[in-house]
Image (cartoon, rainbow, N blue to C red; front, side, top):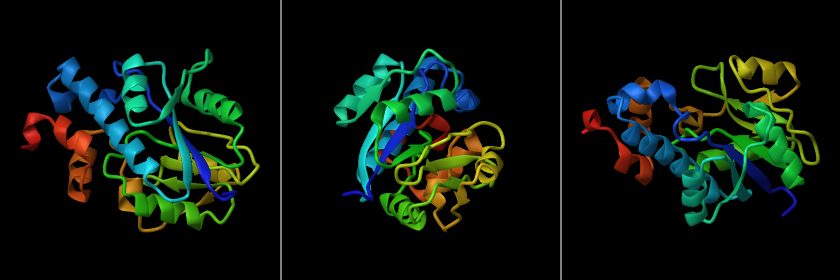
Length: 207
């Protein structure tokens, strides 16, 4: 269908991912990597199950991530030589050349397909974004059909996307706005209902 979107989900190598969550797993690198991977897998699983999403493609240079995503039926693209999240997303958008493209953050372990679908529909064919629960970051960025994604992720990305002309979408979508960077975020996501991968990777203090 022409209204369907292809979503890019960038996933860092597991040794670089979610560094602010290191304390949640007691500094154990194996447990930390497992938790970071689980967050991404639950995010991607929910996106794959969302009506209106044609396909999901991860951008990662971590073979372990690519292997687990392949098991979910999801293709992975390697990160480009140019560093940075925005460069990776721009590279992914150029590679896919989709009629409509979007970028979804990989740390939404409570994501509900119905909420993602509602946000896609609320965009009404415009370039649009969903701010995180604090209102400063961005969890989802959508290009207009046939338009450029023009990602501006980083500190204060919600403001940067707004200034660049993207329309803010502020529906009541708590699972779409609850990205997980800290222990507090993880506790909030637990209250919304985590995906199975994250539940299985939860640190001991949550039980």
